[in-house]
Image (cartoon, rainbow, N blue to C red; front, side):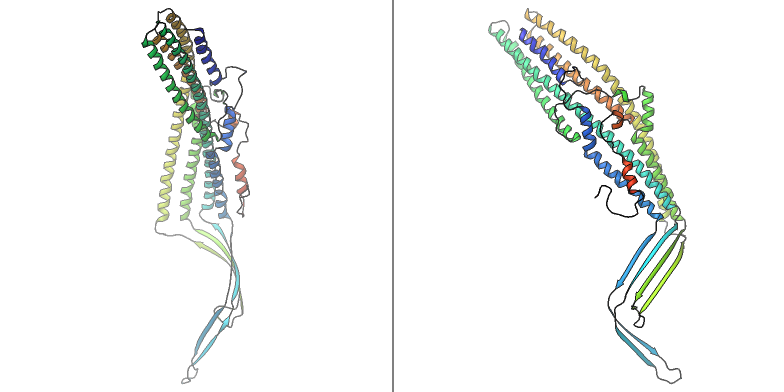
Length: 477
């Protein structure tokens, strides 16, 4: 094997790994887009996160809707128009035998009037208070759901970034492999022309080159798919990606601590807990329908030209009345709603158990994947070193006729596979660290140190909670 071929093989593949590997290998490496910047773009621009933020803001409006039960209801009415009125009155004589007379009155008038009604609920079986607490629990559940979405998107963004970085490195490795196989085929043909090898050796080199080109096409397809996923999740076209590092330092040091933290603080568990509160308060709201309702109503009415009499020119009325309503039996619907709410409460409690079990399973699984990824990096790096030594030895043995061309090609392919395994292991190491952090429930911008304004869901809530009127949203829409 010539010195030129050896330099292409060793130097070429080393350069490919140094430029495209997942972990930073040199301080002088040109910096491009980083994983941090990709996560920042996804956090700010991903439509799934923005959609859930809008859903959270919509949920905030449930609190002022519930609080409206404490407030009065005011209705103003007005009427006016023209009408034709005709009436006939019968008058019987006082003295027996006196004939009956009929008095007819007809004409046109234009009655008009205005009035106002104010209704204030004083007691409704604590339904308003329970609806308010229920709406507040729903707001907290929506915020936890937003955290779930943020974690999911950030994990998807990190995975998409690492997938593209991995596929870029693999594509580079496969292209350099084709260059080496082309040189191998050229030298094999030269040796065939001088009678050192047989036609079989040439065919084996041609076959290896064709297989290498096939691997390039496959790597190119994987790269294209990863680039499309990157664009979908992060929202921008990928540029030159820089190496990334794991985030193990933000996760608990022990598996038991990770399981405990995840079971208590994972936003999926928190969402399920608040959903239990919402369901429990719904039972109380349904039970409130069995209580009496007490309200007070004030009414003021001013009319001109009575619509029922031509003789009345003006009338005025005002009233202040209390109303007590005691439900005795309303067809049984209220009892069915109470039973239904209790069954829903039981379901939400089971969902909470399921969420905790799922989080525990995810934490244990992610912990195992991370441990395996750490060990796999060491194993694959040792495999690369051994494959390099084996390839150099087989080349020297082939040069003196102790090895065949097939042995050299096999050793070359083994080294390529080993280098691909290193890139894949480094990818898995970073992705597994993000997966564990998400399973624990700590994959958040403020935890991993993203330099991006963190969305504060309480701002909108405080802006709308005590609004009595107005249709414009706080952002001006």
